[in-house]
Length: 417
Image 1 (cartoon, rainbow, N blue to C red):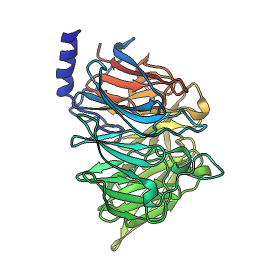
Image 2 (cartoon, one colour):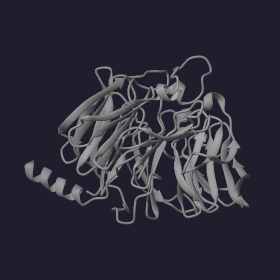
Image 3 (cartoon, one colour):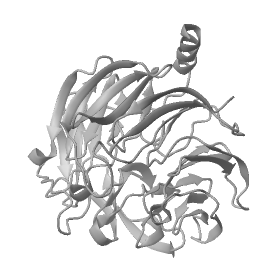
């Protein structure tokens, strides 16, 4: 067992780490140097499996360590584990857990690991910086001090103030970007070493989708999906560059925007999937809706882009492929397993010319990323019911399951056997 663990540690040390939500490039795309799968084993080998507390946060992996956010004793708790064997390194309790009718009591936001630091955002609106080696707290921020008042599942309150903060912080260089919400705090830039505010801007309310970095019409910016709609934000100071209003009941904007050239793809369960073209008008930027696809409307799943096509979960419970230039569906498939079709969810990882999908039913499916039709390359059962993005590191898949109050499991699977 010791030899196996040491071999695992050596392999992971040379692997492409999964340090944040949706992987190294934050878009569900495995870098070229990562180990892309061409098939799936009929029964994946379980490297290790441990009990997990409640939560909807996805695991991340950095430098041979798995960082796992869960409910322990009523506190949202960051736990560091050996990626090789699942043994505990440290744990740090942070903020009281949050519970509503949408999920279990526990954290809902995936941590980010960067520069020897772990950044953890708790459901009620706090951000914590921990030392990655020992879990000691460096600094923390309460969003209430920035003007956000957390309310919870009451009345018709929309966005993150209702169901908790889920949008993973964006770390670039020495800065962290978070969507707090409220007067002058729609988006806030934080110094990652001190936790001090560098700038804050806009009056929009935070939804559930994270800010996505992009260059559109020659301007570097963040694409934010606020409660009020899709907005382009200047990376330097938070200035609004363009906006497309999109409103839904309770501001349930979950799916992360996708960028292809100067086109932004964004949508939700009520407005459908929408293509927006960003163009220049002198020194200003203009936005124009190009198309809408109702069949491909995303709910609680995040789509991916391969070349000029969008792949995601549409409604009802279908895997869809959409041409980004026209908005037309190339194909749809309804063979993936979802225990609750009304809230069908799947996470997608692009692996070269293939896509690995993990459904909310715990089913893994590998298929070709082709607009010509759905071509399955393999399918297997990986875990129980889940709503979490797995972490993938050179053939090893780290996934948590269990969305009930009793918690579930954190599992490491070898998909290369």
